[in-house]
Image 1 (tube, rainbow, N blue to C red):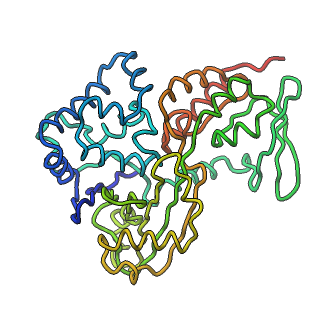
Image 2 (tube, rainbow, N blue to C red):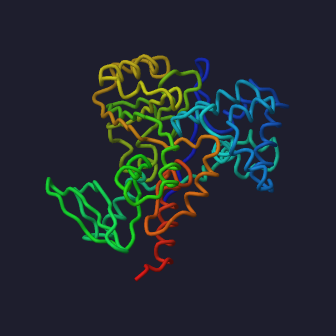
Image 3 (cartoon, one colour):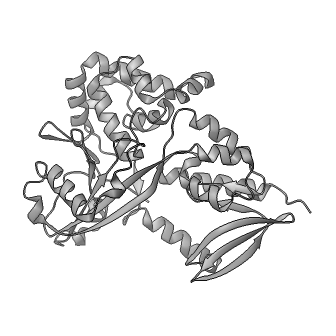
Length: 374
């Protein structure tokens, strides 16, 4: 693992780019006011450090929007973190719980001991990846598991077979099955609910059905000259559909000096819905998506139309589980319901890659611990 080099974050607002955490903090203080910004930081600190469990339960049961409004947080801070929420979770402040917002917002201020600290340039991002991105992690897992993985296979149904489970799947057009003592479902909750409907309890299915998913689109933009290379991630605070623009070669170019003169660049544009109820993204054609990108990024990247030499569009129907109010209470119940069928995935903890890995490890530990009845 390698640390993502600084500057990691930048923000585009009102026709100007603010590069680095210190510049973003100054913009926030200017637009929100020192007192309001300090109040927001204190709220985050109190929520993270030493908040009683009852307070967390309250935060789980109200929206992030309500929490910020009730505490008088400025419209600019709300705008900034609403864009972050859409970019990270595909959901807005009215969709997610206050509890699910807090870890991401607080992460911006890790290590901050005083208000003045946030205006000092930082040398460390405290964020980690691999030189070629997190796909290297899944590749490494696949290599380690080797022949234990059945490739080109799709599970279509799971049924009971005495005290065991019959896992039926299609492999290269042929239906087959395996017998398992225990099963871990690491698929999006709607998929899990469907393929395991015969073995999940009524309550498990009720809880899974309450998890909503946000749509999402990512677009890799190829070019011979940089489209964006000023930071790792540019948050577009006054955009419409495009929330972020990433330099997809940021990390690799830093750790591989031999790439310095390579004239091949990749920027990644993230297209997020207005909220979880917005299902319009999947209706856009490739031409419409590229038109949106060129229109919205034209002021940020002058001449972007002529810079792009190619693109690769990825559409995600079930991109992010939305941690709506009450999510963590429901998940606590779901985690305690495992008996033979174990659930894993980002919807079991938090909608990030790390949480998906963590929930898989948690499910595996529980599966290994529990004995199979004779």
